[in-house]
Image (cartoon, rainbow, N blue to C red; front, side, top):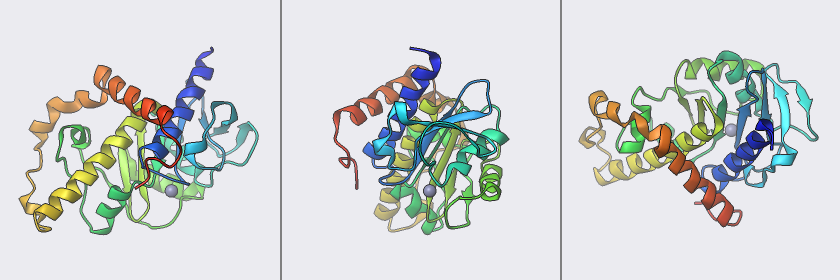
Length: 238
Ligand SMILES: [Zn+2]
């Protein structure tokens, strides 16, 4: 198997993870940059739960279809312009996870409330404009909101994560949704009073950076990939 073939497998698994873990259903997508190029692998316009390694498209950062059969997802500009803006980014995930959407709609920013959430201790900026990212200009706008960071919350829409590789971007997306779901439960238990949450300080979060690196991240990927392989389509939906 070539490196690009292995990457195709990872992109297909990443997309299926998004659907099986309940981060997306009919919509959402994960992509990976083909290393050393301005092109990336992305599924065709269908549920991420149906992604297949052999059916991925190759698209460039100008939004041109380079190879593959089929129509790209309409929000491919999210990926194209993130890779254009950030040479260090090798994997991008865009999904519509419900707890993250809820947080945006009650005006609560993401807070670090458990260990895995600590990877976002620098904050998750909000892209406040509602609606889909179907133009190059909106893709650039979203990339600007993410800036040099790891993710953005998208009001009434979902999230985008940007990391060095697609596995990390996918694990991070799962962590972000887990974190948002816990934050909502804590807010509810605290009668909606955000000041009662014992949010991790920057100093407390710092030693937890390894939650998205090395063996910890590998373990998370292996688990999410196994869930995606073992469970039928739709099983992760909430
Ligand atoms: Zn979307």
